[in-house]
Length: 164
Image 1 (cartoon, rainbow, N blue to C red):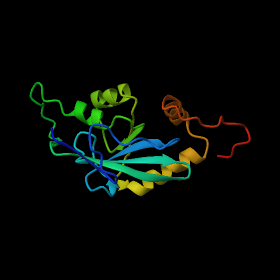
Image 2: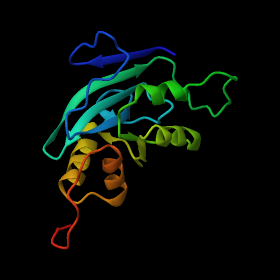
Image 3: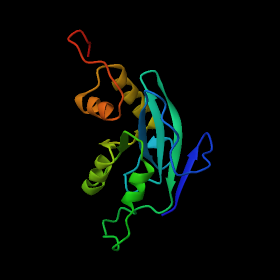
């Protein structure tokens, strides 16, 4: 499987993703066109990776794959693992947004400490980032607080004075 990484600052080694900004949540988005969340995990041609904070977001890199699933539902030949390289390529991400993901793929992501999130309809990447940023600004839902704690990102504890 051929893997390409595109980032704003060239990485000479290409083995590791760029360092995460302090306090940022690293988010990967399954995309075919780098503009919209419009792909299933296994068939995504690309993953757009962003660092998101309550104050904004910044593009980190695009990870591109040449060998993708055709979503035909047919079994792959033994030893032809397309999922593990995708999970490895997303190392360091905390969240993955996609249109669909199978159970075994989701389990591999969770084991790698990447929380998969299925979105019911295609939408722009900026909409996904706005919503993620909004969740960080307010009191995050319990599942996101768990992700933030696991990532070593401290969030203020919710209080009765917080507005919804």
